[in-house]
Length: 114
Image 1 (cartoon, rainbow, N blue to C red):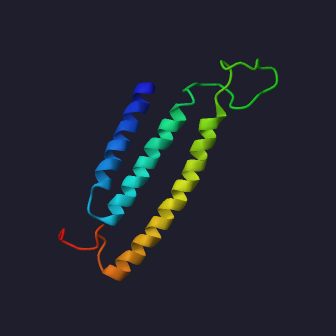
Image 2 (spheres, rainbow, N blue to C red):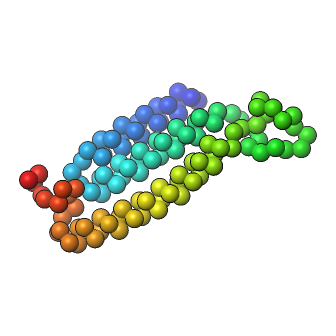
């Protein structure tokens, strides 16, 4: 399971960096989204991959780390998802405004790499 998760994080990171280096604004936004997904998976994996473990204290279960998951990475990922969605929406509005003013969607505002 850890191998599959690490491969997924690597593929998302590589795809995100590749898209960040593209000349069009929409591709840069998608690259940032993929990088944020990779970081969310990385933070989530820091809380240990386990099955049938409670995130909060439950009655009748011994309060040791063997029986519970760390709830902090789950809370951080949930917060990061909400912030990432708002950031993507804001970037898309800025992209549309920039495209309306300049007439193209290149990152530097000039078509043809000038």
